[in-house]
Length: 380
Image (cartoon, rainbow, N blue to C red):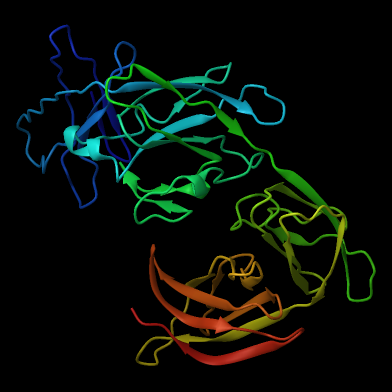
């Protein structure tokens, strides 16, 4: 059994009679404090973990929480590289799809990170207790080597889509995992096999040139890997670039921006495109303005971020992304550089960790255009 909150984890082991004692659980001080106890078994029969809330736990008195663990089915498998067949030490998460009829027969299932996710061994092998009925094994490596969200299209859950799949103990965000595999053991099964193959996809090579056709080195790039929201940390060392982890089902949008030369461009890699390709950059646009509240009062020091890039129904890139957050200065002015002409840009204003509003929506600029929006309003 273990108690977990975001800052502290307490662990203990039950005795031969199943009795346990956890001492030192801190009092609940604010809304959102994790006050949960997770019971899980390592080794032995495939008991599914179970979780219970401690309750308010403001005082110093004892709290009693009994658990009745229920046996499931072992899901066993091996994680390998799809191309080489070599083992991969990826992490494994298990989710129960919300359309699984066995959910009502099992205790509340929890995967607090004191025991999950687990990691495959040196040979890529893993073992996890699962519930009868439809569930998902999610494998992730935590780097940019492999494609993301592979297998999501084959998992059809009521009310779900490709990237957000209703499940327990929480929704599956498909792009947080390299591969998602469906498991569907039957009641009475002792084990099921769920081998996982991580896919590196293909690589597209290309070059960047300026409006005059001359090579351009030192641009930043978004979309080089299969996580569309991240810009490269460093500029490209030359005019050459690579797009990795490409699949054969969907296009991939990439965006380039050269800060010094003030050049930008978006390019969409087609599902069957092999390359190499040449991308001609063009003069980037920019936005500026003053940020005020609903009463017209200035809002200095407010951080704003851009929306993530989004494509349209036919595979074209529709919305852009700014390379970094911006902040209003003491004169409450802001400036957003590096905008790709023709794409839509929106800005969200933040108050702490909460979006306070969207003062800029769907603005499109022309090549080299610096558009001043004047006063834009954000509400608390």
